[in-house]
Structure formats: structure tokens, C-alpha cells
Length: 389
Image (cartoon, rainbow, N blue to C red):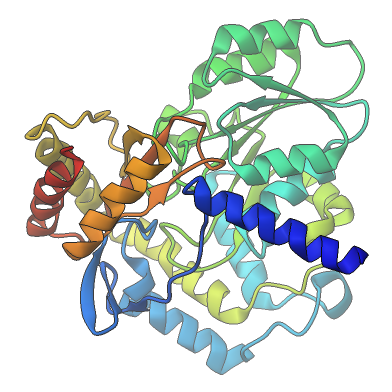
């Protein structure tokens, strides 16, 4: 009886999602190159990827992954605190720390695990976390898992953040957490103001650079973009977006990294990152340093996409970020526009609650360095037509 009720409840919940146009399912696309996929024999232009520099199909990055497998095998064989650390991981952590301008770095298996493990590993009951209301889900989950008191400030509202900090009790650690580039809106956090408030109120600062690494600050992220690398306590991110690999990282000082090694559950209880991902990432970091034209091309494409959208009076932010939120409002409208684009050979996924707020459903258009001018022009024209009632 009880088991039957459980299945009925699950099915009712799924049916409700379908009725509300919020039901999600996975579609199996076959990658062709960094900007195209295949489905049922048809080629589609991918405009929903975070492969910002096209490194997933870069021959040097692929060679780095292949060499790592040939040298160290396909798997890591265990958690680092039980089976030891592959020297390739040690090298990558040194590379990441140098790249970000910190003394130490620690690699996680995903950016999600890095956020959850870092926040919950550093903060606990009696501590205070100040979190932007539009921070990524992994930050929100890390805050919940920590057991700390969480104070959510209105998006990029520095006055509200100041007020919350001023009202905190004198006891407990304080941590301000923000996305560097916000994933759904493509705006950059007000890091100079955040750093100033942190100094005034005695708080640490943590920036999630998932969508900033490889994109702004000469590819080094938000802190470098603002010239504040020495003022940000924790620079965190993923290896799976602009770097074209898989995994997550935390860059900080030795005390913070050692604290995470000893207290971060997502690090302690996970088998280490596989050699292929580590090898690929090492090469990707080298390319960012040696071949700046990848980032230059990305910025040129962002500029071209902005101009193409403006031709059709579609609002753009002009902030050099390759994320263009096309807000349409209703879930149904977002799905309708996405389906129209799909019919024209373009993949641009509808983003709906709970990923975004009610009434803020959208298409999140993302540009990469490998898109051509013709791609961008076609997308803008086709999108404008699809948005018409």
C-alpha cells in the first residue's frame, strides 16, 4: 500500500510538471565538432553550450588527454587520502594556483562538488554566509549543507549586503559568496564593492568563476579582471566550460586548502579526478597563456552577436560576456520559441523555473570562439522570426 502510494505521488508530480510546461528530459545528441551536433541524421548548430573557447575539440587538448591515459591509465584508482595523488594532479594544482595568482589549489571532480565541499568544509553552525540571490544552485546547496546561518542579499545590491553585514553578531566566521559571472543573466558581480565591504566587516570573499575563467580578465577570471587577485580569499570554478575538460578547482592560501583537505566531504570521500581530464586541463591552461587569440576571437564573436541581435531590436548587455539571456516570460513561450529554432536547425534550450524565477523563462544564447560570422547572423535572423507572435 505504502509503495503504491509512493509511485502514485511521483507520477502525479511528473504530470504536474508536464502540465506546467516544466517537464525535462535528456536528448542524445552526437557531437560533430565544437559548434555542431547530429540528431537523427540531421546537423544542428549548437547555441546552448558553455564550451566557450571550443577546447573540447581542440587537437592539443585532446592530445593532452590521450597522453595522460597512455601514461596513467583510464581511472585514478581511489580517493586521494587513501590511494595517494597522481603526480599529474599535483602538477595541475600548481598550474592552477600560478594561473590564478594564489599559493595553493585543490582539484575536485566537478565544479558543483567544489562549491558544495568548499562552503560546507569552511563554514558551520554559528558562522554566517552572505550569498547573492542569483548564485548558482551548487552554492545554495553548499550553504544549506554547511549548517551556517545564510543571509541572502538582493542581486548585486551592495547596500543590502552592507546592511546584512552590519546586523551580524560579533561571533562566528563571515563569508561573502558570489558568482563572478552569473550564469543565467551574464552579468558580472560588483567585486570591488564586495571586497571593500568584506574588509570593513571582517568577512572572507569567495568568487565562483565557472563562467569567468577563460572569458574575462585575460582568461584568469573575475578577480584578475578587476585587479583584485590579492583581495579575494577563494577563487573557485569548473574545468568543464571554457577549459573544455571535466572537474572543479579551488584556489586559495595554504590554510584554506589544508582546511578543505581535512573537512571537505566531497573531496575526502570521492575517487580522484581521472587522468584524461587532468591532462586535457593542463594543456588548456597552457593554451590560455600561449595562444591569447582564442579569447580574442570569443570577444569578437560576442561583439558580432550583440550587433546582430541589435539589428532586430533584441536587448543586449554589452559586457563582453558570451551569455545572452533572451527573456520571453512564460514557460510555454520559451518552449515554443525553442521548438521553432530547432525546426530551423538551431539548438537553443528553453530555461524555465526553478532554474530562473517565475515569469523569467528565457532562452540562454551562448556564443563560442568557434562560431562563424555566418552562424551568428543566421541565429539572430532566425531568433527574431521565432520571437514574433
